[in-house]
Amino acid sequence: MSKAKFERNKPHVNIGTMGHIDHGKTTLTAAISKTLSDRGLADFTS
Image (tube, rainbow, N blue to C red; front, side, top):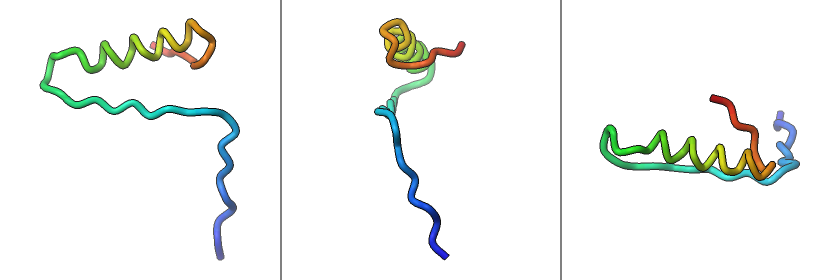
């Protein structure tokens, strides 16, 4: 049996980061998420 097709109802973005430990990847991702949240484009959870 085939599964039902998953329908996306809202825009989304995937953020991928690469880099050495302690170079700010988590901080950068949190800042992007917070900025999008401030603009009403995302939900920010800390």
